[in-house]
Image (tube, rainbow, N blue to C red):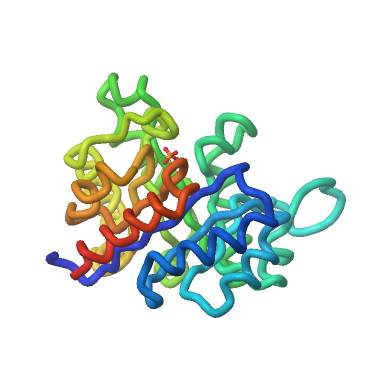
Length: 256
Ligand code: PGA
């Protein structure tokens, strides 16, 4: 490996698992991975406190899956960045394609959410990625560049260093059709390159860029060995500890 970045695996449970199921999951996962392996689990809002308590003595970090773009007030049903930080959450997904397509979230919304999170010390895991249509038109790179520009607008280099990026092509999410390692590498490299244009090479070299979209026990090794892929955001394959642990172990091997 030619860089000093770690390889990080995050599991995105989406709207799966009950709070009462987390204890068994964490016990099982901890038996399957080294005690010092840093991993993130993105859990639903009502399970956050329980998940935080159950992982307190582990290296597993708990992430929320979304945050309100509003600070506080009359926004029934929403959860603010301050509320997440108050219970000890350290990470939060923003701009997941499911939020974008089912809740019409725009890059501008994502930018506001990122700023809310950073203002209370939570690291955003920023999801970007193109549709199949854009890819087929040859516009994947220009599209993700425009996403990067808008979602990072107004962030200082110091703030950017607290963020993670997840490149998740929409056509690969939950479809079983992953990007090939070359396709994913090309996109992650381009995103890094563009960040170096917007910020500096130094900042771009530090930021972790994860790949997400049907990463599983079979393709993880090929994807994780790529220079610009610093880990994975895993949906379906994070639901069973047997599979998720194999992906984590693969990332540990590639880090060496
Ligand atoms: P998937 O989901 O691994 O099930 O494709 C990834 C994600 O949506 O973050």
